[in-house]
Amino acid sequence: MKEYTKHVNRRDFLKIVGISTATTTAVFYGCNPNNRAGFGKNASSPVPTDEMTYRTFPAIGDRVSLLGYGCMRWPTIPSPDGNGDLIDQDAVNGLVDYAIAHGVNYFDTSPVYVQGWSEKATGIALKKHPRNTIFIATKLSNFRDHTRESGLAMYHQSLADLQTDYIDYYLLHSIGSGGVEAFNERYVDNGLLSFLLKEREAGRIRKLGFSFHGTIEVFDYLLSIHDEIHWDFVQIQLNYMDWQHAGQRNVNASYLYGELTKLRIPSIIMEPLLGGRLSNIPDYLVPRYKQRSPESSVASWAFRFAASHEFVLTVLSGMTYMEHLQDNIRTYSPLVPLTVEDRTFLEEMTELILQYPTIPCNDCKYCMPCPYGIDIPGILLHYNKCINEGNMPQSQGDENYRKARRIFLVGYDRSVPKLRQASHCIGCKECNPTCPQRINIPEELQQIDRFVEQLKQNTSEQL
Image (cartoon, rainbow, N blue to C red):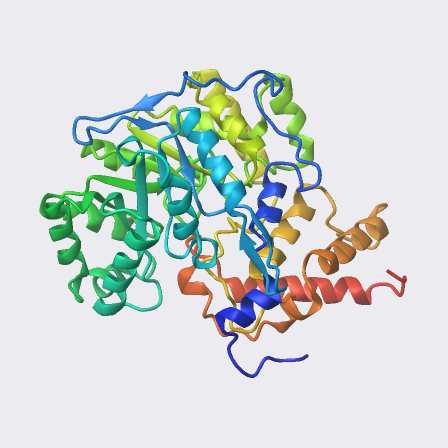
């Protein structure tokens, strides 16, 4: 097995992989870049321009659109020099213009989104709109470098890239991994939290909060210092699967939301689709959703669930294609809250989805670039896709084994170049600390590699 003998720098990484955001996001919505069939309640009907649902709370004061634009998955195009992909700025501008024209006013980005280009692209797209009509959220994403100097530089660069002199909603990014000690190391011991509190006093940060992925102990600690810090909002992962079935990797959303509501802290929702896994569900379950609501997309059920909680300020969605944006605008223009019967239905669907052992990868790409060139999200997403489509070869005695085996192996080679497949993982674990879903990534990659090798050895059939 070939091994890379040195880490891959940013330029080489982009040359090897590009940014595959648009392709993977298309899979999540049941389409692809060449056949983008949209979901939605009567998808052929006009998209409302003046029916968006808004939320506000006394402690916030802002009138925020229930649909928030997550800027993690901007569309991309091939770079003219062949070195990976670039953000398609024209497409971003069009999506932002359309979103604002249809009532969306909250835009959430980060210095690490789209391999570091999201803030600049978002700033360009928002610049032509009156600053006082939109709310910009970004983050201190100091995952790897915890020094004060690096944090301050990241903060000031965000202001520059977003072309603004203040941030409406500023977040300490993905708190929870590594325990309270990691929180203190990233934000307290280096004085960054004190600096941000002063920036809030000065008005350059209007609202200060954090996004959370971690344990109950860390979450409870963060809320215990609320009287001292005064968190204006908290961003949590909330969807109908994680409401009561987050598993060992995360905290049940019902607990997170409940504790925030007790303190009257508004929730901002991330991962309402679990990175697309609640729209890219097992194929045999789709008819059940359609039978219950023929004109609604599978994705719209998840968005309605997230927004039906009254102390939610906004629900973020990373929308790469216009069809995604239009579907979500329809869902929230206006919101039709779930009924008790609807919630029961989604709990039943959750129990069925949990029978499919997918890997909880949300394609956030925080694990990237891999220092050894591995396409971590691409590998995990291909594995999950085969599970959801029923193309997982189980036993050579199964009737469809040969067909499923071929689909899995051919699809693997097509979606992930051989030099970037799981066989090249050396188990360095550099990817683990930044994974918000707390996946043991090397372990999953090694299991997939063993599975692939087993499939290759089970037959001499020419692929």
